[in-house]
Length: 422
Image 1 (cartoon, one colour):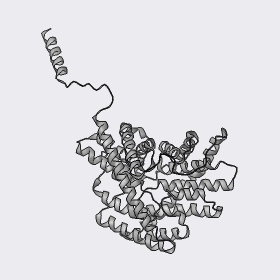
Image 2: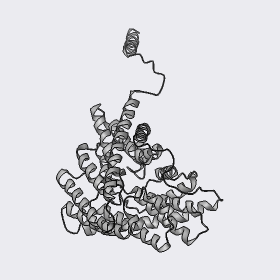
Image 3: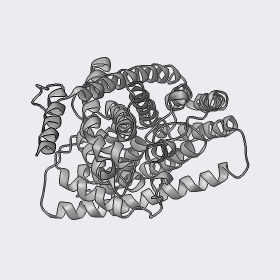
Image 4: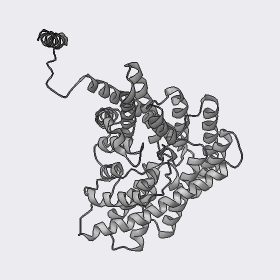
């Protein structure tokens, strides 16, 4: 009996020794850390975007045949930056580090990534700023986590939240950006990193708020699509049909990228020679088809508003795929999500010209969803992103198209680090 009483006494003393907490809410100090990361991510994204817009405006002065030497010189400079400052890697490296390096993203290569990607994107490469932003803000999350001595899943979650803040700032979709930062890591079991979803959502919201304040961003869709009106159950069938063909073009992009990769890796040549050759080839394509230049953020609206003949649309579709493939494989830095959306929109316009009775908006959005889900294997976030960016208020047709593109994706993923490792 005495022993039991002593044990009870020790238990009571332990309880009394703990600090009394008066917080009856889920809210905790970690929320402030996630919010701080989002604020920093928004500032980084805003500064990057202002620099990108300024440099793009300066280089846009050159037109016609001048785009060839301009893109060649920018490619050479980007290659020299990577050669002397350090190789920042690509999206494959980010995914690998999150999955197999305890969630640590090294910030030491950020200067190389920022400078090289600014040159590549601003000069007209067919890659967007989303990948550089994801890497910089993700590594900022790692740095902040180490500063507060976080370890294990807490550190990994903060890195993922940083990635989400950068992605969200550009796309203006906190939920879609948060889900994308999870889905892109592990295509088959996104819930593996479910602990990071709340940190990612909090960081995304604060990041978008700051980014919107810096560049005066509106809250509406960024691409002008005509309003969609649901016409019946057959719309889902059309969405799947468009998605099947969109997935076929996703395969075409993957094979095209592998083809150019085999050419650029045939002989070991310095990175600045590869980026120089890539710049020349991209400049030639941009000279003949100006709409294929840049990553498609503004060009997509021009594509939608212009009344292009069918032959020109086919040419834009083919050469845009080639341009993205060359940009990816020649060492240029950037992300391929928005360029793939541009390819999907072009394919949807082709469908509409071939079959004028089909709903144009449904065709465009379905193709955009399918080709992106096929290449990146992110059906959930693709659905939410497109609904936000296009103002397409009906989720289900986009989800049908996204899932179709996902399930028709190649068994070996385009982002090699998405493969499961034992």
